Structures are given as C-alpha cells and as structure tokens.
Image 1: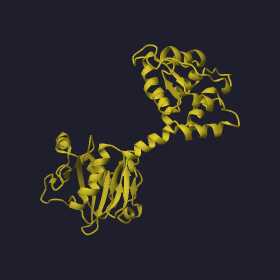
Image 2: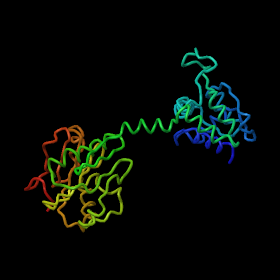
Image 3: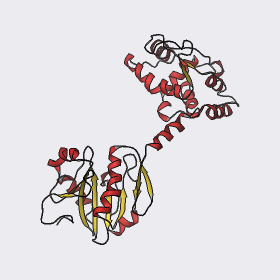
Length: 312
C-alpha cells in the first residue's frame, strides 16, 4: 500500500465511519503526523496545523493533492470535526483560549492516537488499535447507535416488528401499515414493504407468486402492497411525500407489471397531510383512491360509480 492507503487503513482500524476513510481524511492524518511518502509511521509526531496553510498546503506540496480554497470548510466539517469526536485529534491544544474564528485555530493529534499510530506496520499495531478503540470508543459505533435511535418502528399485522430508516417518507409508510390497513383492509396480508434505503425491507415472495406476481425489479414496485383475501383485492399503495402519486402513467405501468395477477387491483395514493395532497391533486388518476394520514378515517375516491375497489 502507498502512504495514503496506509492512512486509510489506520482510520478504518481506529473506528472511523466509511465517510471518513477517504483520501481527504487520509491526507489530513498524514499532515497532522508530518509524514512524507517514504517515512515510517514511527516517525509520526504531534504538531499543530491550521486547515488551509497547514493541512491543505501539506497535501498539495508533499502528496500533490490540490484542493480548491473553498473546500476548507469540507475539511473542517467532514473530516476534522469527526476526528475530534473520535479522540484522534485535538482542537487548539496548544492555545485552548483561542476564539472560534481565530486565524490561529489549529488541530493536532491526541497523545493516545499518536501512540497507537506510531506502531502501524509493526507486530504491536493490532493490539494498539484495539486498545485505542476500547479506551476512546469507536466513532462508527457511536454513529450507528445514534442512527438506530432514529429508526422508524413499524408493527406488521402479524405482530412482527421492523425498523425503517428515518425520514418523512418512511414515517408515512409505517402509517399505511399501522393505520390505513386496519381501517380499510383489516383482513389484508402485507406482501411487500419498501424502504428508502432498502427497497425490499419486507417481501412475501411466495404469497405474491401465488397471486401471479413475480417480482423482478423492486425499484418499480409501489411502496406498500397489501392483499385482502376475503375480497380478493390487491392494494397497491404509493406513499407520497414529494413525488409519486397514482398518476395515469403510473397506473398503466402497474397494470402491465401486475397483468398476470388474478386479484383485483386497488390503486391508492397516500399523503401525510392535506398540504401534500393539494400539491399533487392535478396528477392523480381517475378510478384511484386517496388516503391522507392526518385524516385517517376517510378516503377520497376519484370519480366512478363505486367507492374503493378494483378498477374495471
């Protein structure tokens, strides 16, 4: 490995998230260590460097990596702040009283990080890295724990629980399962539930196949699919927070996708509130249903001689 790759390996071992294992982060570590391409890691030393004239200048002069001046804040916000949180770097250790906007504001390796880093490439490295993480904590673990606290829980009709990634779209999807379904499809079985980060969070492949539905492309599926066996209706529900109601185009796409399905298809556009519904009202296809989470006991049917049921 070259020096930049070695620096990335060190950051990984010291518990940095993937976003802080990139080249910018590696160059920052090398600058703070004062290491040139041919230096051994046991030559690392503690020094205070500013962002522009210290870290960025070192990367350009020693490693030929030139960053535009306006990336200074990227170094600060996307690299240095996280290195400080990980206890790998100290902020203003040689003059703690400096004001926040001082041109002399600087960063330096912590004593604990320096001691571990100096062992890289030796038989002591793995133990030193583990000791550092055990004593100082892993930022990756902290971030994952923080993210887990923000997950959106959803309880399925059969009592099973899942966790969505955070976000307004997934909150609405949870409401479709927990609020819409018991009201308008109380006997329905959940067949599919997507997530903004996991398009196939829950899939009953066997159940869909028994209806004549074979999934090949998750990206094109509606957000939620529910099957009401008593009425033999398949609810195709789109959760609309910024785009994607049941437009005429979308209905045609789904009709083609579910052409072999023997159940009647019910198309539903779900909105979090009236404001979002108003934004899309002109796009919604006739003979489809609208559900608004802030008024959960009511449905709006777009025209036709029946309320709630398969398109004819």
